[in-house]
Structure formats: C-alpha cells, structure tokens
Length: 125
Image 1 (tube, rainbow, N blue to C red):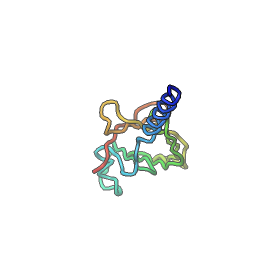
Image 2 (cartoon, helix red, strand yellow; image 1 turned 90 degrees about the vertical axis):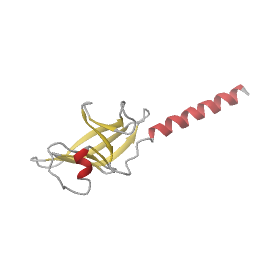
Image 3 (cartoon, rainbow, N blue to C red; image 1 turned 120 degrees about the vertical axis):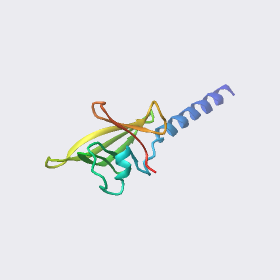
Image 4 (spheres, rainbow, N blue to C red; image 1 turned 30 degrees about the horizontal axis):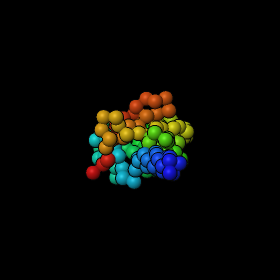
C-alpha cells in the first residue's frame, strides 16, 4: 500500500510539473501599451514597443520570428528566433526566455539570452 501511495504521489508531482511547464499560452497576443495598439499592424509610431504572439516578438527596432519553443521545468518558455534589426542587413539567431512576472501572474516577462529584461507584457484586449 505504501509503494502505491509513493507511485501516486510521484505521478501527481510529475503531472503538476508538466502543467506548469505548459502554463504560458501565447494563442492570444501580449504586449505593452504600444504593442497592443499595434497588434494588427503599425498604427502608432512608438520608440518603445513590445508585442509577443505565438509566432513572433516585435519591438520598435526589431522583428523576431520564432523557429522553436521549448517549455522549461520552471514553467518558463525558451524561444529560438531569427531577428531582423532596423538598419541592419540579414537575420541574426537569438534566444529569449518568457516567464510569468513575479509581481503579477497575469503578466509575462521577456528577457534576452543574457537575462536582460526587455519588458513586461499583458494580454492584449
């Protein structure tokens, strides 16, 4: 009986871990104020903008198209992307980490490969 309890406990823990890893849903766009305004195309010029969709990350100066998304055990999402930067030729490969905000679970934080926070985004209305 004790062995069965241990197996059930371990299974529940694995399921809980898996659920949190799948916790970031990008089926609807996230953005800061200007990112959400521009979610349907460039409507407002803004020098600071962040828009996150299931396929791309767009800032005022760059557009990154996702090629791979890897859920992590801590619930974050590591995204591999190719980015076009305004004023530069070609595309550069890069990685981003997307995780829930420590201050507000409804918001997401986007950080670059070095861990520098690019911004915090909310689900667009």
